[in-house]
Length: 436
Image 1 (tube, one colour):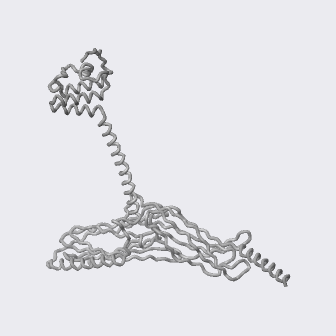
Image 2 (cartoon, one colour; image 1 turned 180 degrees about the vertical axis):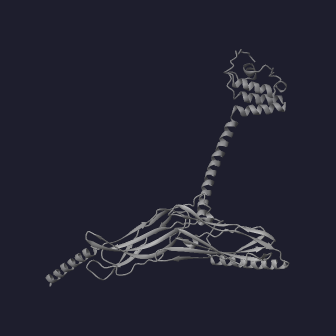
Image 3 (cartoon, helix red, strand yellow; image 1 turned 30 degrees about the vertical axis):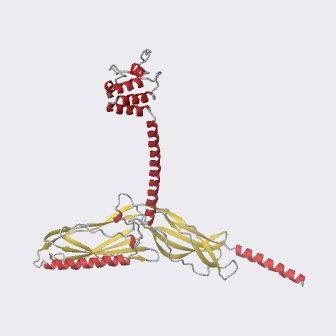
């Protein structure tokens, strides 16, 4: 029995080893490719994720659309792939996405955990495996400076058409003309077709209507449509010129800017004896306009803003402000320390006591002047710290009487005295000793 158990154990290890080798012989991996690594805002990037197996897939692979921050994504279809290597056939499924960045921040196509079912070599039953794809970063270039942001559109083509509701021939004051413009753009999504900027016209009130947008996707292409309406209310007689409407788009394949132009026209507005109708029409259009705006605000997902900034812009602005405050705090701290040091040095300087002497001279008080002068002399580098020696060594031509300082010491001659002291090395004088 023991021998039989040992044989079973050896057989179990053998099957386990063979099974492990069997599974290890199967290869399942993924690759990610992009057709561009740097694009403009709105320019599409094709991202292809391909999963390969050394056998085959027993279950279809279809991840559907995914979310990419800062971009619109359009999922097209899975495409079967296969190739031969070293006499062995490998099967693959390619998932094709087109990514349309809507801001000038770099975007990252995320790493994906892809679950597949594929049998091991020699088997027929699919085994679940999870394959992780690599993330891909795409550099997004801002809209060129010479282009208006409100008119920027990247597309392979653009068709523009318009329709007028109402007669353009017989118009009178209070009449309304409705204009509908439809744009069809190739290889873009509807959200990236910019809204029309309507021209203001003299003596005409303009009431834009609700825009309608939708994207059209086939197995191999995508296009988008935007339809907009506007109503012109003519309020005064005379000729009104509606200018040309020019739409531009940038073809990223040809690297060129193209345009489509809707020709303008001039209409003559005749008189209307019933001017009361004008107010009624204006009120009606205004009410409809308010309803359109209210519905758009209700239906649209509002972007979170803080003080008019996006969360990212607010964080950057806050960090910038904190950094600026920190720098200002350090600067003012240094400045205060510098001022205090300068003030302290000044209060112990010769200049400080000289300024006190000048202040004492203005008082005309003999004792105050003498005390101030002796205090100033203490700061000077003299062989003898006396008023008499200072006058002889650095005195000016004007007479200064040490016994009558209040009347003989003036702002002028004391400044001259200090000037001669400061330049005493340049003007050496022969000093005679005089016993005070």
